[in-house]
Length: 399
Image 1 (tube, helix red, strand yellow):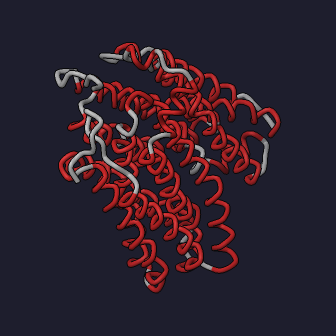
Image 2: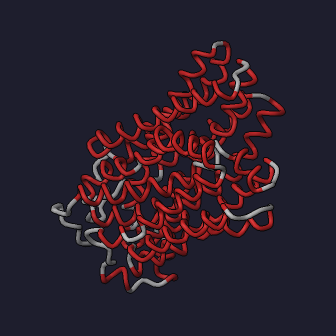
Image 3: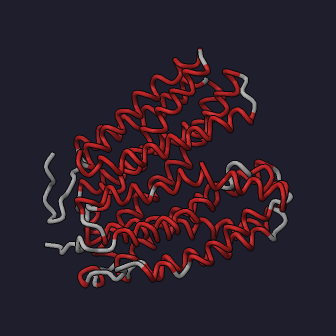
């Protein structure tokens, strides 16, 4: 039986340190979306070339399993610190570049830093927190994504207007540098002895021999098929259907940030009590139903916003709750499983984002929504038929 971390671990310190670090990483990830036109002009490139840079950054998710294996064998502290330092250097380097060619390498390095940091932190939290409380703690740390959109990005917009396009990148770089020592304050960051002996072949074998783990990783990708179609089309849908100007779409985006925060809070309050598998299944069902209904809400702007809000709540609840479900699939290879889940989501985002835009432009919102519904519906089937929620002793948890 795999020993579990002590419940007496200082969870308050763990949550505070993790939340601070994730705020820096999530801000670095999100700031390119609303400010892409200004950043592209600052780099001297076109908007489409700026979008290409974001795609190249996202492609670095393929290296996540390498860092998952590193974490399973050596622990998270050095890897988390290195990722923050790499993020700081990449952002500062990018802020001093001109032209597409000079911007590619720092953007690739920025993608590598995120691919190393996020699954590693999730695995570290999963090691430190008992299974019965893990869902709540992971959800609390995931507040960072919503907080970034609600509170930090508006401040960076003000800084950009006052100080120039480089200022958000350099501010986040300095904050990342300042936070780099924090992983060494985590209450426990060394791998168990059994983990330290794992090699690549054994780790891959442990994951591959678990049908539940394989299905859970696939679920992590399929839910992003649905979500990415939603996120790449909702702004254009609002503009095309209701004539919304960019500032109005921005207000809707801010409202969706509130939806994300609400969903993370809901997951932190109930997921450990209702069960992680049951919660993920309920979230996927809500994603499927709300996305299927979305095209029919196009007759009214108010109804459309309600539909967007409902879908955002259901997706954010699902993705946050799914971290805990993934974390106990193969405990000796926890970092690898979480990294593979991150990679699956990244691959799905790259493919479905492009497909969603093409379907929307050629056939309309109903066609794009159909792809999104298919992704979440297949994920729902896998959760109920193939994924098992495992208790800390390795046995299936009560259904």
